[in-house]
Length: 166
Image (cartoon, rainbow, N blue to C red):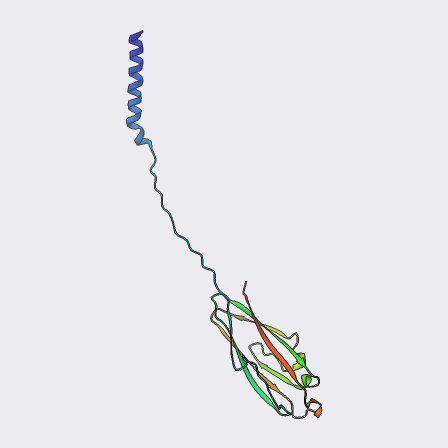
């Protein structure tokens, strides 16, 4: 039995040695690479306003026949395309509000209207990154306005809001 045991142990040792010697030839190749680093940068949306109408104006001593053109430039100085919405507000004494005429020169060709109707007036324009839009408006008081505007006051504002284009 010792001879059988020795033969069995010898056979197992030979098979084990063969497996150990040939095991490397049955493995798969392996390689690993990393892509990156990947960086994400958020864009910007920024509205800049310029032109003659950006500061506060006090039009004094206006009378029938008076007019004054003003220009506002709106520029998207960001890196993301947007839509510019212009909204008007007005307040003051009537009939002066009704007698002041506003004529706007813009890409949509907004018709003339009186200052009293500015409240709620809203118009939108595409404004791509880096693009500038100029809006010129003319304030005027027609020559045939009656004396009832004497001593009256009116105030108005034009607000621009830039929102990202979806």
